[in-house]
Length: 178
Image (cartoon, rainbow, N blue to C red; front, side, top):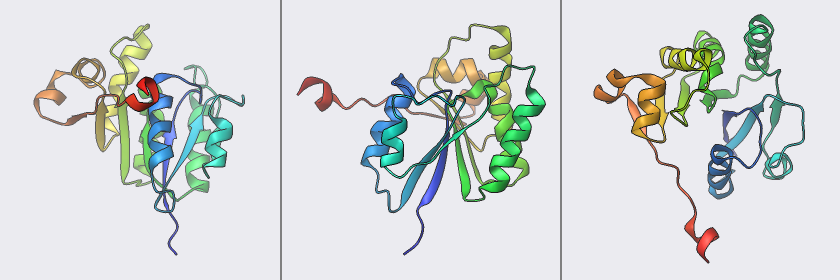
């Protein structure tokens, strides 16, 4: 039997936030003999979904939280993680403000699928505003939850050139209304 394809998702934490909950909704439904989700989080805390991820067969890698001043340490941790885990050919970055670091390393290591996923259009600092725009240069695929998020993260030209896949957040209505 073949090993499942391993997709590495990047989050700050694995708590019950919007993006994390949507990914977990998908994770619960996929055929884990074919596709397996693993995660990079930027904490060593036991998070809301940590136990469930491990029960579903996923791995969790904890890295230092990026703060700008620790750029070289953060870059070194990513390089080591990807060197030690060649099975990660698909990296799905839900944190576009730091994606310019890890997607660039993944590109240098010839990882074939590098996704930058715009989750919102509200950047609370100038650093986050500009750093999120850098991710598009190292990604093979650009995803966004809305046109507004896509413009905020990747710019109007990417929308015009149809380089962004808009994937609205899908919510399991049966869970809410039944």
